[in-house]
Image (cartoon, rainbow, N blue to C red; front, side, top):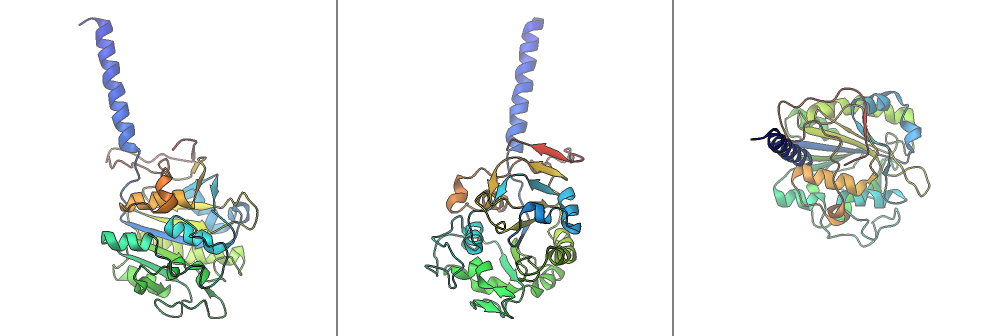
Length: 300
């Protein structure tokens, strides 16, 4: 074999290996547990410098162009839960056209045999359909699952049960956590919300284990058509200090969560390309190492 032929063959092998390796990496890794925590009505610059949140940003993956779907609050929660606003454009309670029967994370999880729960602070009782409770510290507009008639509402629980479920080894595969209106920055201060996160998120991050993630996001920003919000993904499978420049939104996040949990993405999430650039070792190769320091991507 001539030198030129040998070089051509080597280049072909290397090229094929690169394509295979890239293809293997272009996936969302399987996720054992997902916890999504939703806060309220803040621009990124409002919260980036908060004591706990700033540390979370340094240890997780964030997005320079993450946008909510709409204003006001309720359609954003419904969009993240079901892949569409389902015609809801207000905070009306009960929501327009409820009970909704479109596919959502609850129905998809139940059909696949996956456990799910929503934990809301000051929820008056499991499965409650009250619009408000405890002086409006609980607001149904922040609990989208209550608007759907095709899920098991026994999975809607008071927030205090999350700690008990973690302690008993009953953490569901998918959990949504909704702080009350004092702690989610809706009525309380950024400092109060940051303190609530500092007291609660570390335990959640530990609980999801080596193949789980905790997503901290905001429903919408304070105002304006751009609707940019901070979103942080934390967990051992996520690159530390990573910032993705790719434009993403609540539908992109929903698609990513569905891929990680092996669920079919509902509604507008099906047309989204999942978040692929934030993961450490998505292929599961034990030889892969986490990238140190802050990085930035304009790709996936």
